[in-house]
Length: 121
Image (cartoon, rainbow, N blue to C red):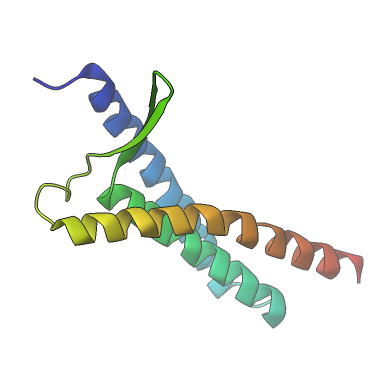
């Protein structure tokens, strides 16, 4: 018997990943097909879109939830691949997910600055 919270977390995470992959995939396709975008801006936007796609794929493979209980913090892994992959790959997936999460703070300002520079010229 599984908990209702783990089922709810799985459903919400799968829906979130579906939207992440669809939006970033469509964005990448638009950037590739549109020739009016300057090459410097195109490179930044492609990197941003690929980052989003990788982020969505890693979340699908390694579902995780953050739990705070009595002043303790835990990250639970319960993705579809967790029971079949070795511990080292589970840890690698969690590290990749953490790195991709922190890279968001580096990658989001870059396209915004590039768009600002393109609009002010």
